[in-house]
Length: 93
Image (cartoon, rainbow, N blue to C red):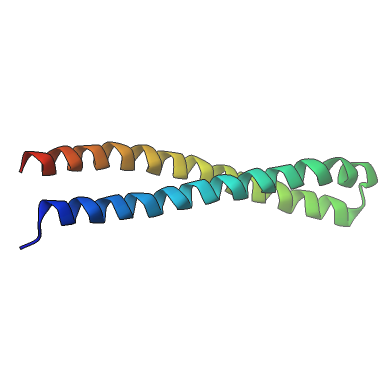
């Protein structure tokens, strides 16, 4: 039989690992948007066909990053709520 302590430790480890992913995504998204902010003015200024292609791809990438951050935030909120509910349930056992 699994002990309550063992289940709580497993949940703690799971939560810690998901928090690392959440923080990593934040770092990656911040860096990606900083890079875009730096290259965008130069690409717009030059305005060659290739520069426009790169900008379009960069904007698509920024949209994907934004969606990822949004979904990560939703996941973190959901995990927090569910994690709290599970912890309370285990404590009642």
